[in-house]
Length: 358
Ligand code: PMP
Figure 1 (cartoon, rainbow, N blue to C red):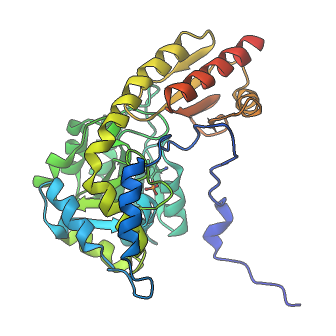
Figure 2: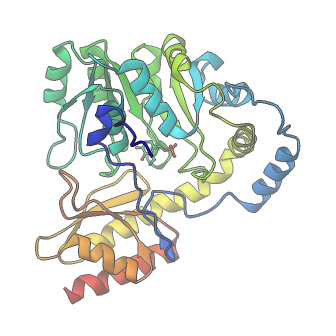
């Protein structure tokens, strides 16, 4: 049998994305919504799916959804673009604005997918690290942008996994510091109730990423979207897979979006529970939680406690959180999504038991 020649050289530095998704009683590792789509909405979805012709290609741009989202955001159809989850649109960003000889400005610690996409597309990466409290280093960012060689940057607001918001002022300053395309990743914006959407009126180099995976309980369906100016989105259209958003997902997302007001109560509950979990974590000796505007909380264990071991002990007790303890800038940190009150209580109980034993 012939051996196989090596894959593209840029893959050597890349590990396949592994969310470490292990079945557990309490799944609070992936920032999902613990509550599935309400039963009545699921019934409506089933009815809608019955009408989908499976033998025909879907509408490639999902124009019905674009119209709904455009209307809700005071925009036109050509200022909205759908994707197979936010992930596809993040990849498309690297394809369209990255590449050999191009440069991506990253603000670690943040979502690791950005870096991977840059590596995959042979895009140079410039890091401007966050400050100790994980806020953005505005001075350093603006100075770096002013050099004029940055092609695109991604500002995550709220940031994953650290939880804090980027304010409109810092985003505006970035938009004015250069002509780089600035993506603001608002995957979790419904939990902060804060958006930089107003900045779109005056800034052609802004594009906003959103997703149905979190607030709208559709992580399993894969639906994300961009808001931006039509010329920018036209470049995304050139690199996207024509049929990435399938007909069934389009039908599901239409019904969910039409019923989005029904998700508000669940979002309120998560915001309320976030305070409960934050206070409980900070009242524990040896644990400090970072303030969050999102549906998860990052917390750091002091050096006497091995976070990797706490992660394993929690899993043993049926609670899956995310282990960042070996990630640069996040040493000895774990992240827990905000679940239902019962899930949060079980997580906190087990954490108290485990930390008190060490
Ligand atoms: N951006 C951030 C910051 C995320 O955390 C995620 C999901 N983990 C995404 C984008 C992409 O989400 P999805 O592909 O499910 O829309």
